[in-house]
Figure 1 (spheres, rainbow, N blue to C red):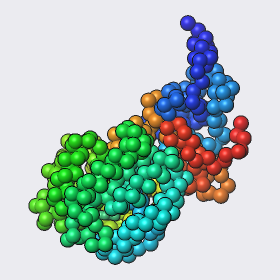
Figure 2: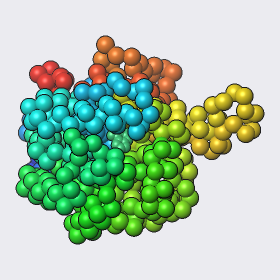
Figure 3: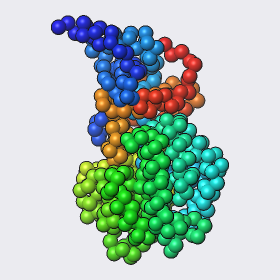
Figure 4: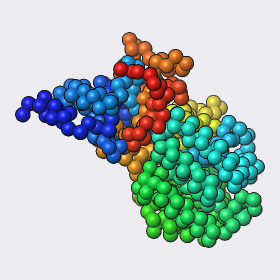
Length: 472
Ligand code: GUN
Ligand code: FE
């Protein structure tokens, strides 16, 4: 049969929810860059990508015409690129007012002196509304289509955070923080008991599932802050809840010398093995940091397919060490990137890519010039820009067990337009000097908020900085 007839037939049917015509750049596999020049991506009513039609496909023209006739076509201009949206695997929403502050103390003092007093303010829902609205807007404007959020200990404020993500259209996984151990948590900022902490977690789950449905764009997450902040009773009950519901779990794991040693002294095992024993390590668990994990921990994490949220910038302030990223990737562990706002003072996952690359190179070469070069570093520890972008997109999606981060049929259309031509930004292409893959390299190293022009989640426009401009 004539392929042109097929294409015309397809175009004559229902037009897609939307079609985006332009050059697609993504990293469908670790280290693999795919550039599809002049492609057309069509999205169905369910927000999933239906087809990625390449430039030489005879269906391309008819699809563009049908989408244009239905008023559903977005046509990218020269210098604009369609990329998957960014995935942030670790954000402390209540720490947003503290971003760019209070980075002078070690983790345990920072928590006690700066962070717990700030998070305690979220008992006030007005304060929470003021803070959370700005945070979600900022992350979306930076191209973060999916965020995994720690809320605060408060049920009401964390419900409000979920409501705001839902209203603003961000894909969000949100947890009411559990922290009930009076040894570490102050009287003014603590769950009153393990029983109350778990009951409020259950109420939070119900709230979010009522809001967005059980498999919705906003999902509840079981969130023990970290082992030092939780009693064994709370950890056991949350483990039971995780097994019973199959929901996501998030916590901090082996972050710093202090934290890693604290858990080994208290429980006689590493964070990873302890979480496993509590029933908190599974396919939908995301472990923030994990800098001090040993080979045995990696086996446990890999064995159940849990994910790691690598937070390279915050690690520079609080962790005393660099996460062995390349080793984790070699072992096929599920890894993505996190900003760790406000331990990491930067809201952009593009920045997290840059910091992940730099940290990995410092680990590879070592940092102390007084040590001989052959003893200074860990050879093989470096990653490159393409691997970093994969972590920021597809890697984050795999870690969360969600179909996001790749521009291919069946994946959610969570995507953004990067415009390399905006005047008030530093990203510059040199077409006469650049290979096609250099475009992604320049974007990873140079993209700023101003370059993110349009953002979709599930095919719905959630940011459009050029609304009203006619690009056709
Ligand atoms: N460990 C426990 N709580 C926190 C937190 O808020 N930030 C970081 N970076 N580590 C933690
Ligand atoms: Fe954190």
